[in-house]
Length: 102
Image 1: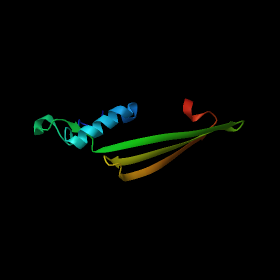
Image 2: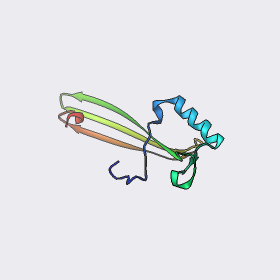
Image 3: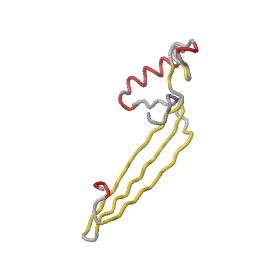
Image 4: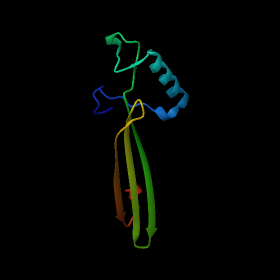
């Protein structure tokens, strides 16, 4: 990550539900702990928070031009699925050409 400085890691948790379930079992048994590192003597580290994002878009075009509307939604949850923060951002681009190809 360009600006993370090694402090933040992004994991593809949606890649495998079985892996997520296995990690939850390990956490509950004490085999992994949040915030753990090899230097602290803990077996392994796991995540404390999960940030998810969803992107939706609508495009329209006519003789006058094109319009692209995007909605980006973020959610931050902790390990127990408690919602800590959420926000949405709207982006609209209009012009003679589609905003996707600019």
